[in-house]
Length: 94
Image (cartoon, rainbow, N blue to C red; front, side, top):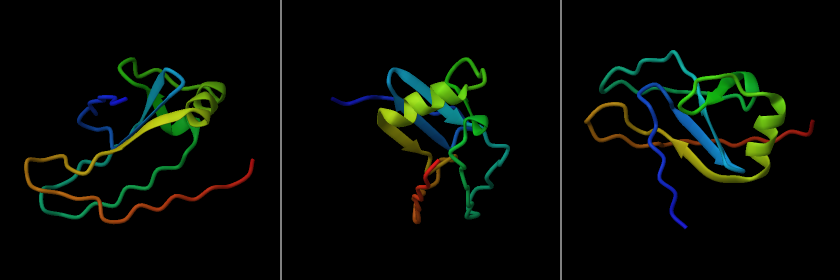
């Protein structure tokens, strides 16, 4: 099953699971042609509900993570060709 999700201009990461979609909020404004590193801590306080912009509770965030179906990472903010070159995933026990 293909799922389509469109990221807003400032959303570098979106996660969808269990019928919820949350997006990472970032103040970084990339400059064309300048490499940008974005680190995203997987904490509910770093995400908001897609479209509404309301805060995400810990319970909602855990529901999303427990049933992840889609993970979007924005590679380009401008019309120039871009690529994601280095993605690290770390896990920890709560």
